[in-house]
Structures are given as structure tokens and as C-alpha cells.
Length: 142
Image (tube, rainbow, N blue to C red; front, side, top):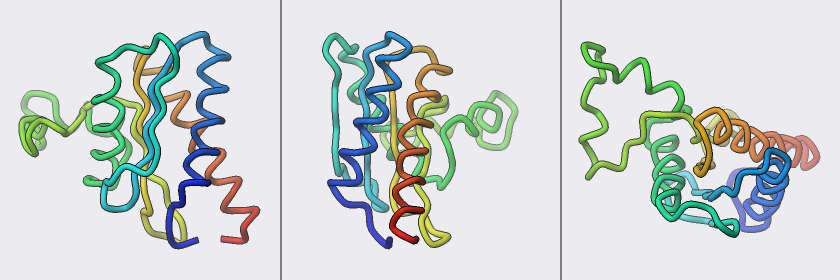
């Protein structure tokens, strides 16, 4: 699979929403393509309004830096080599967990970003989306 489709993104969001319901936290889930362009977006009832931008920016950050956003916390701490990176790109770079890139055929084809709960909860829901993506890739033979 060389590209992220709307059908795949919708299935990922469905799995992420199921996980959010399991933990009892309304979430915002964003899926972007390899260029950071929005493919699908979902805001659960009562999810925080601030989570709209955060989820989209977590997904964008994961694609732009080719890594999970959780990896940025330590690298961007005061005195660390990426300190201040969050002030670049008009403040779009997110430094905490919940954004995870999506890989197929050894390249990043998109990312998921989740916001609405604690960082741990956001990561858990994002991981549910990634797990469903990986299952779809196996099923498709990618």
C-alpha cells in the first residue's frame, strides 16, 4: 500500500474511537497523509475544543519530523539539542505524545494524531489507530 486512503483513515478512526470509549474519554482523532494534509478528522461528542488543533498538529508533527511526538519531550527540554523547536513552523510542532507516523513499505505514508485526555490516554488511543492500520496492511499483503 503506497498511499493512505479515506477508507483506511475512517477504519483507523473507528478503532481509535472504540478505545476512547473503553477508557471513557472523548477524543479528537486526526489522520494526515505523507504531506501532512488532512485525510480524515473526527471529534467525539464533548471532546475539548482545544484538542481540535492539537490533534491535527500532532499528526502533522509526526509526518514532518518522521517520529512519534512522544519522542520529542526529552529532545526538546531546556538544554537539549532540539530546545525551542516548538517555536518553529508557526507553533505547529507538538512536543508530547499522541502523534504517531504510519509506515508502509518502509516509508511514512501518513500519521495519526489524538488529543483529549492525558498524554498517556492520547498515546493509547493513537496506538489503537496504528494497530488497526498495521492489521489492514497485513491483510492487504503490504
